[in-house]
Length: 280
Image 1 (cartoon, rainbow, N blue to C red):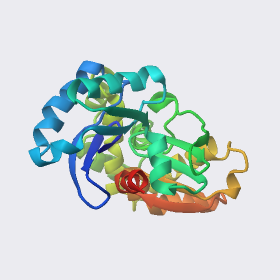
Image 2: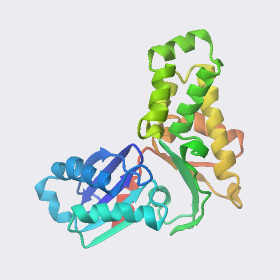
Image 3: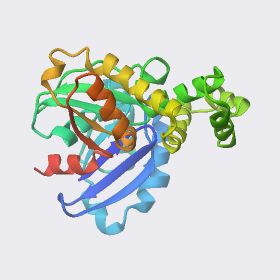
């Protein structure tokens, strides 16, 4: 069995015999909102297949793919067709990465599961399926609390001259330069991934009070827009998966506490939880 967890930045492909015997391969992220079937096939052919050891190829008959952007039959169909063109698999199942997060974080238990990575999303999970979801509108209109949101907010604070002079100079030496940012954000592909890269700068300077405030404000926006609109949200623990939740856990917990929200677990990646789910 292959279990794949894909965000907009990275895909982890786990070729597994069971939950204790497996081999992992990492490739570029896959998102059908930004990539065509041909683009996805190219990633699989050039980055995945050459790195699967021959001894593991016999375990690829069943493929469970969870991915960002796979929220409609049309988009999930793009990924499914790409996978089927690359593998002679008897079963290919494509689901949204939000379901992957819920299964990895909560297993068969009820709760609210969230993604905070390059993008963001959330859902209420009943132990089997998603029962409520406030759709994410992507990095232009949503993705609150995500790497793209934090990165965009950092650049906006710089552009609006809201940062002190010393911090501005440090950021300028680390890539925050007007023409470079504008060129990458408006003229090159995958601007969400580019903006999310600035979250690394935020993490490097998280002890600076202005940066800390920017990050915490992004998390307050996430809770306001993506959690507090759910029915009876205070009756659930809220759990998170993703690099942003993992690396900014302290600021995330502070924002949750400020808003009276009960935090559950935080995972950097869902792949281990998904492996346990599929082999349980």
